[in-house]
Image 1: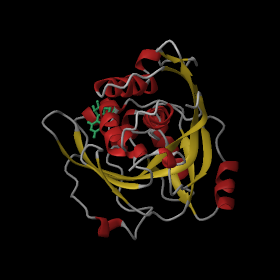
Image 2: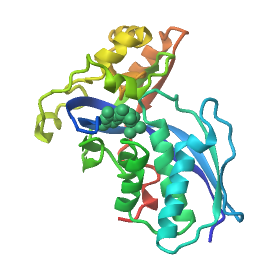
Image 3: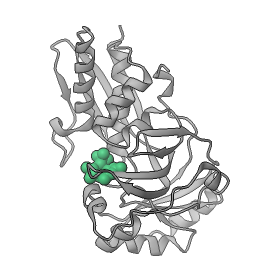
Image 4: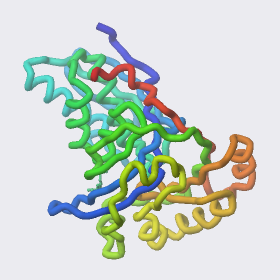
Length: 288
Ligand code: C5P
């Protein structure tokens, strides 16, 4: 058995559009969205431990280890293995956090998905992709997507996934320096919750650019830097927020155009050029 798995990639995502089509009795919202993997990522490192403990070996400001989604993912996988009579060794998890938190690009969810994939391999627990997705949904609505292996049309609260091909594109992604709490945006009385349901044929030839992000108006009103970043980026292309914010993005025709936009970036913001990924970099670890 291998003792470690280092340099595990946890890629970010963009929501090319995000429609809120209803609300369930439990308060969770019904969504329709296209989740697009991009080439920005956190890096995670896993080492087996003989003492059975699950330990995060990196400090992350504002995220205590026991609430870290990677540690909770490891705990869930360990319990699922125990229920099948498999005892697993422990693990040390180191996280090279590069993606902004509260940014709407799925960093925490992707870290959790990568932890499930890596530890399922390292511990030889042999859960299927579907089983990992069921565990992942307990950690967050976006986690199953990162276990699906590619880009997807996402419905339900995040658990109904249809794989799709999306056009290759360059984007500029701007982080306006605020962290947006997802529950507050979904809970807003001002949120539009009745967007008309669409079908794949409505949007498949019109990506990126189709539809809108229903969470954007609420987040931009509550967080003026989000509105500022949208206004600034609108000069470069159609600017849109991803997830519940705070990051905003615009599709550009080429890498050179993305570079041109980045050169003009106000110094108060952080920004990246990024391109679409077709396949999750860890997808080879998944059994079907
Ligand atoms: O599942 P996740 O941690 O991403 O969700 C954070 C919060 O966002 C939930 O507690 C819920 O308030 C809200 N949410 C929602 N509908 C979704 C996803 C999230 O209302 N489909």
